[in-house]
Amino acid sequence: MSFPRSSGILLHPTSLPGPYGIGELGREAHRFADFLRDAGQRIWQVLPLEPTDYGDSPYQCFSAFAGNPLLISLDTLVERGYLESRQLDSRPEFPAGEVDFGTVIAWKIPLLRHMLSGRSNAVRRPSAKHSRLSAKGTPPGSTNLPSSWRSRKRTTTLCGRGPRSGDA
Figure 1 (cartoon, helix red, strand yellow):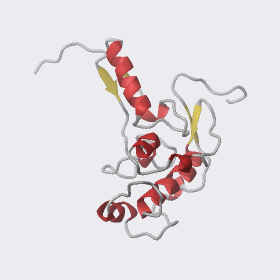
Figure 2 (spheres, helix red, strand yellow):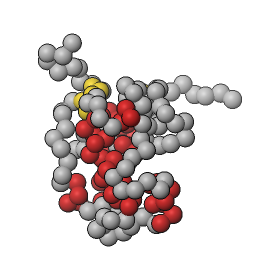
Figure 3 (cartoon, one colour):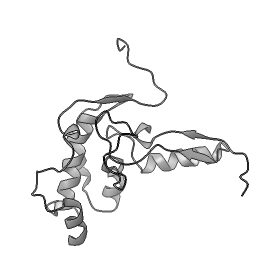
Figure 4 (cartoon, one colour):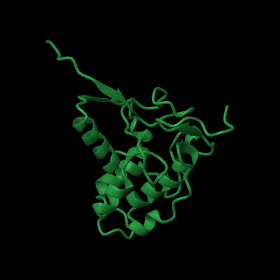
């Protein structure tokens, strides 16, 4: 099988811009794919999309089968009625130019768990089947995430931006 010569870019979706502290597979990802197409690029290579463990490296995943919940588009959940826009008003102030994984995880994971618990006032609720699969029988507020996701402040510089002044 022959493949025609092509060009593209390597960019992890977490490096895309967005108002929720991390790039998501939502509107900005679609805009980026459209930009690549319009620029004549044929390939968008992404790093693994699994949940990361210590160090937040896409190559340091704790599951080869799970998708990273941090990539779920909150705006899409609002548009589809799974969340209310007012639920996103409580977002913390995220740093510009980098992903603070600790802050994103501390805010976004409980929001997603609340949505799946059925206690959200959103117009549409996930089915009981999806709630059971996602919550895995854990009581509200508990977590079965790895310890490295729970309490450490972690940051990653976004693509196209260097370290902040004063950083080594």
